[in-house]
Image 1: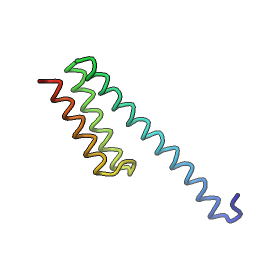
Image 2 (image 1 turned 180 degrees about the vertical axis):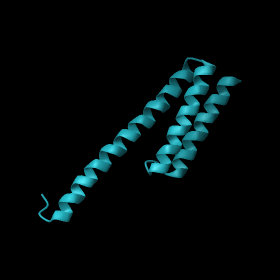
Image 3 (image 1 turned 45 degrees about the vertical axis):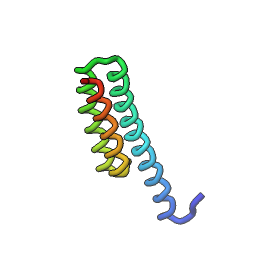
Image 4 (image 1 turned 135 degrees about the vertical axis):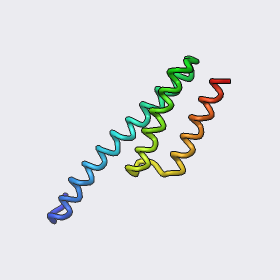
Length: 88
């Protein structure tokens, strides 16, 4: 355990950030799963709505530093391909 005051603060701040990042990453996974379920059920309207929400959450994750921008671009590209494949 840390003895120095600044080190104790670092531990507290680190734990708070870890919890926040974990919650945001969990939210991201939830929206991606909702989109996947909509695609699997062949529900075009639900898939489009889930797609919009998933894209927003991915972009927010990049802004918060949860995802790297290239990782987000790859996820969005794959979501778009799945959505277009559903419409064909």
